[in-house]
Amino acid sequence: MTNELVDFTLVSVALLCVGIYGLAVKRNALRMLFAVEIVVNAANLNLVAFARFVPDSGGQTLALFSIAVAAAEVAVGLALIIVAYRMYRDIDVAKFGTLRG
View 1 (cartoon, rainbow, N blue to C red):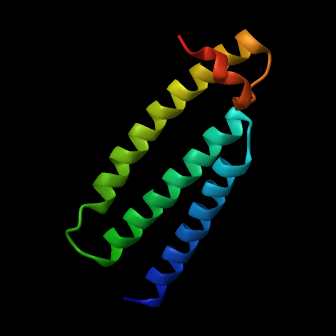
View 2 (view 1 turned 90 degrees about the vertical axis):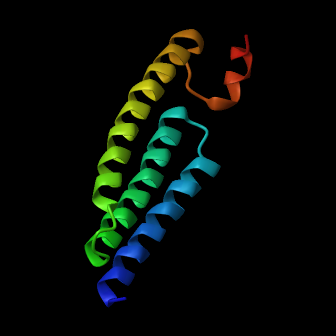
């Protein structure tokens, strides 16, 4: 393991911590969606970093699939947030308990 891989891993861990903090503390749905994206980007950074240092690992291919899935997740998440805002005029996740069917 080289020093560069450790640097990439430390940045990825920092991104993961920021994303988990955003999920745990924030109550705004849009901020929570951004926090999920930060966690996904931390995972993608790890995949690409290990693909660079470990030959034939397929990490870059998996990262591309992850980016595509994250784009779909953002589209669905934003659609849900827009619908919730139209119903409640607020995107506080504590008020979404009445969305049960």
